[in-house]
Length: 156
Image (cartoon, rainbow, N blue to C red; front, side):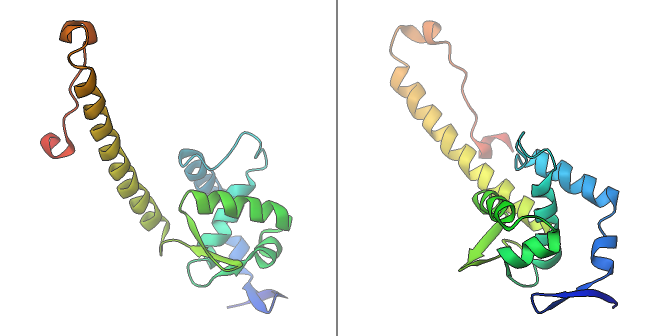
């Protein structure tokens, strides 16, 4: 594999940036929007660039903020800010002062998010049932007009 530059002791393949054509960049940006990782302030869509580098490098090895900044050609502080957002979302995990992808693939990250969301909704449904039971006798059932939430197991 042809290498273009030596930074931070790691050889960066020339194909690394070529792989990130406009289609790939658009897909990362769209995924970041759907995952609510991109804020209105991120007009340059830099979180998608950081995520892209983490997918390319962070699944194989942990990567530090300085190295990430060099690879992504972003300011180190910007990279650390986005790594914090990605960590809060469960996309990356911190290992000391370095980060790695939380799962071995983007699909794995999405599956983990789905499982976490389902657990969260089960908790919300239980809370909703508890609240409904508490208010059920107040003002008659017609006045409260609640709709029962079917449990996830009942929906199958």
